[in-house]
Length: 367
Image 1 (tube, rainbow, N blue to C red):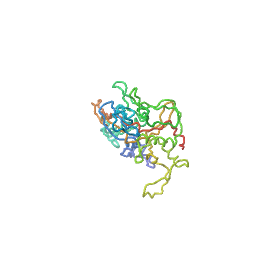
Image 2: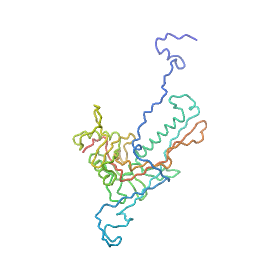
Image 3: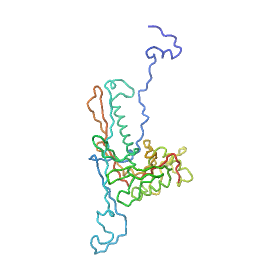
Image 4: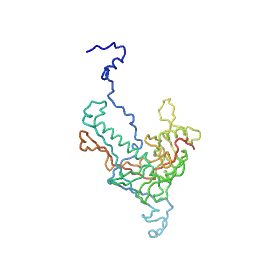
């Protein structure tokens, strides 16, 4: 073996033929920089369904009215007494949604599993963990970031789809005189919501002209939710949007035009940090939790716009026909294959969800 030349720099070791003579220092860990909270799924409830298309019935009390009955009058002959089937008195509304299948596939060769890798990156189990996380993130995206109507689908050419949040915003189709939960900062959009003609949840339509979010729009949405019975002063609602929109709201709260009282900090908090954000907004009718969802994005019809979705998390459910699960088909040659999937949908009460659409998030919020 020939002697090495003088080692007067590390380049002499790195220059040794066939890969150099420096041991590689590779940390035995994989850093996941995309692990983020699922702001929507973390807040809503869970439920079960037993059919690929499922229904739920919404009932509500008749509007309060003056009620005086004549003692010896017969049934239905005096003011204030109506039959239960009368929609003006006690309407029953049946809604339908469909189960959406979301799936991720993992394929790892036998050799890849046998090789020593940092952070077990080549193991089947590690890749399944990653796939399951991605699956739940895809479900979050499908509900809270997609411009999507409900679709019954079929087993051959069309995937069934659960209604995304943007198609929930409508109470005028519920055969009840109610307070609309669809509003827009700009103009030109027509609400979608429940369409009895096709038994589907439809997305808004029209040519969107965007505008800046206003405090009045938010307060009006909360007022209408309150009148619909979706919230009260003891309950927290969620106001969810993009990170840019959340920052826009916080910035406005510190202006002189905001109709906001003194900011409150937690009891016992003696830190000297400067506070430049707003996490909660107490309105006349509810406490709004302001949430920035990384997976929410602008939506596009005729042009791009940003929604602000205000909802009662207690009135929204992620439901499963089959919960997240893993199946193991036969190996593909010397490659092990796994499928992770979930058969899921959403169940909700449209009066409890409000949306402000047509927002230009680059425009400063105003009064």
